[in-house]
Length: 482
Image (cartoon, rainbow, N blue to C red; front, side, top):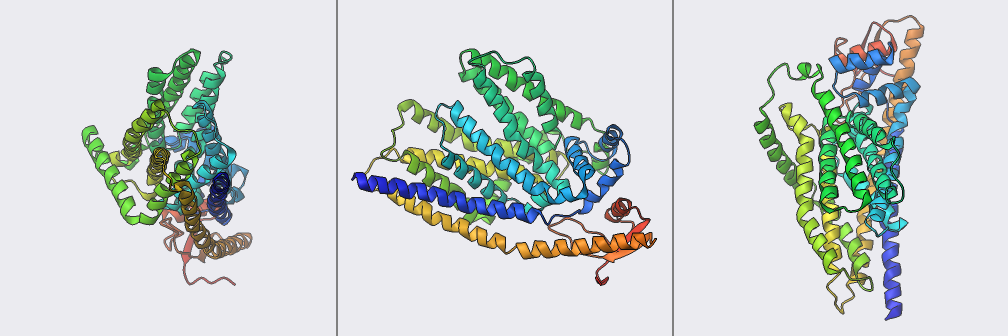
């Protein structure tokens, strides 16, 4: 019996390594594909803002282009460092997200009183990010188009770091008072983080409001006051960012054709769209949804099965409460992320749905993990932990399949980058020869992102002309490379 238990534990650990390795491999390929990113559509328009001082550029953008001020900071910083940063940002952001979520999982488990080991944290981190990006409505726009990435992916990357800062400060408050500079710094960080986009700021406001309620209801001792202060100032920072974006004059350009719906209608539509989004995700992504539920269930079943310590009655009650709360919370967060688009009179575009997709994936993973830990409490002579370990190992084949499918994208991305670089070189050669009205090779748009048009008055062409410092640019499909 001891030998079989030891063998089962080794098999379970090996299965975790497989899950971590294959999901991490897919993420590594995603990062590598990012090195083939180049300027597209709105990316060319950044040159307008580099021609003046930053405060003036920020004001012009806020008044005339977009209410989002933090993503503008990221774009202009990227362009100021150099155009080549477009190829670096996807891998950098993905790496920061992996580290941030792993750090948050460690701090959260430590905060709950039961710190997880590195293998479990790494496996869950890779798995969560892999499944979220696998099911992303438009992965190209989310990761590889800088203008979209800076609004809809970057805030999700930085959110875990804000959460970690709050958790660590609360834990430190048990030993010594919080430094006077921590609350204003958290307010500033929350304000900047909230300025990336409306969907993410509403999700963060919702989560911080929930955190304030939970701290007020359940926390005790000196850390309770610290938690309430830090969560409140962070909440106010996010709320301030939302207020700044809400009063932006740039909204007039977006809503010039029709008045927005009333607040009650906006909420009704958001709830309908949220439900429609969830059901559609289940219908169109049945296999990813299955493994989003199955793998965490098997992992936590293996963790809590014999000979692990049984859950006590208090722990079971908490799990039952979470089982009821998590689906509701996930749905409400999806609705919150949809509200800005609904107010703009539309179902969210693909890139704006990624925050909702992340909420759905995370909710399903947490729910299945809770079910797995509960199922492990039913003791039996049948070696279910061994069965769970074997099933977990078989599930890794799905991740191996994802590795293979992702690798097949590499030649496509590389070829497009080579063509773009050739066109870039031809443009610079023409400029050196004194040409100011350019005709260049036209490429197909990528995953809904517009390329240069045959019409030199098209907004992409006009931005590209300013970017290269010429009078006009037209793109034709029959202009061949030398």
